[in-house]
Amino acid sequence: RLAKRQGSLARRRRSMSWRPLGAALLAARLAGALYDPEHRIESARLYGNIDKYAYYFVDLIVGTPPQRVSVILDTGSGVVAFPCANCGHCGKHIDPAFDFAHSSTAGWLPCGNGCRGGCKNARCSYHQGYTEGSSISGYWFEDWVRLGDTIQRNPPVKAKMGCHDN
Image (cartoon, rainbow, N blue to C red; front, side, top):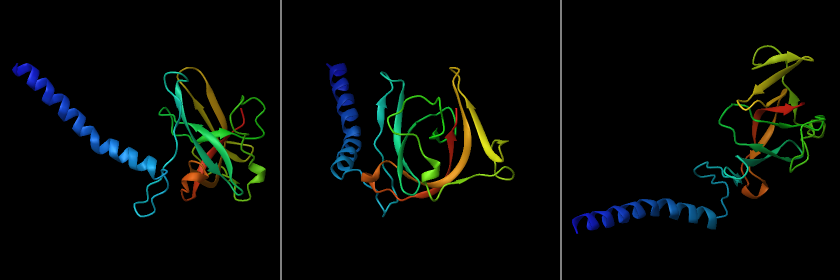
């Protein structure tokens, strides 16, 4: 009888500890998960399924005028990068490849101080290899980026990103 009562109490404590989290998630959903300027909290929709696709991804809005790109959330590297329009073999993606030439605010990062990679064609380049054997490479650039899509209304920030060319 005592074991049954302790099990019941433990279940009740576990369910109570999740109530604040559930309430927060519900509030965020009802609020549309928009940018919170008071607390400076950004939000974005998370897509994918780790069991079905083996990854999750999120949308970014990049450049001026804005172009939507999707990036895989990758804990194996510190590279925020996506295919660019000049990539002939980057595969098929949900969104069109980012067109650097159509962003009036994009700029290639030069070689030298601040370049976190190699130097190719007078531009700062990167190469990222992954455990399962794939890799990406391209050039670093800087432009305005927003987390999520336009619905969340997150503020733009100037950031360094990678533009795949392979």
